[in-house]
Length: 343
Image (tube, rainbow, N blue to C red; front, side, top):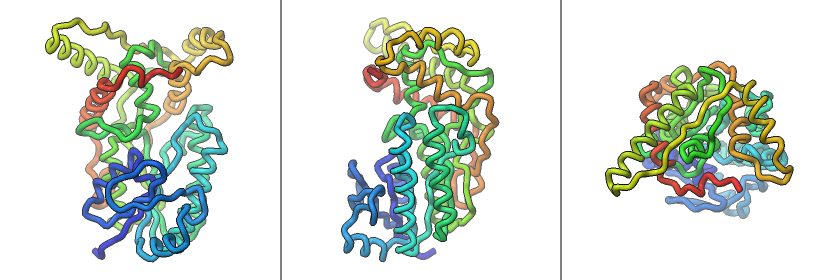
């Protein structure tokens, strides 16, 4: 295969930073905005024409790049629609212009939650902006493949992540004893993918020259139930507490696990209490977690392409995910308690 030069947007993010490690044997240029990364990088801004680069720098980069991996996006689910449109739609348009000028193939990072937009959840505006971005890609004339990623957790071996996501805040608040209740129907499954698995799938798409319309970078039928996730998190926390007591001879804080409530019960009882808070009060983690869970309640598992991408990762098994989740929980337990303070 001919040597490729790859431009990665969003290289300092959760998936982008893991992708740089997967592409260590490839010539990569990272487009960075605020946070620098290792290796060759140019500072730019996808929300600006010409990616925020000087004309000569833009032309030089376009002359070199064979593949663009577009990972830059706003994943702030509470951001305004204007902000989400500016980054996820306008930014995608600018990246497409660059890919066209470079005569490059595009691997476009999208979200599996496009399939669940319109449910009134915290993810709706984000998913809608990503759906619009996909439409731009399909109608651009640029050769492309779309990677629809589900909830990305930490590295499968260490639990580390470049940035905490909504899922981390939900389970992290539970581990810190700040999430007593969570609305969740029995059997609700949460699709999570370790960041290194997601990065391996994207790297395979870069190398395979695959032009299939889209791939699902998801757990699919291996996705665990929320009840199992909480069970694993509480077992991990109990083990960590026991180890701490053994090492320093002190009794650690008593852990009270998060309880699952039927969504209807939660709405009747818990929200009636939360609604009495002053309008100026900061949103509680319970309220944000309830909104986040709407994207998972009463849904079928996502389809998955993991295990079918040539040169990509093997199919994800339930055991793989449980081990990765344990590492993620240990990583979250080591963070300072103020991490989970929303005030």
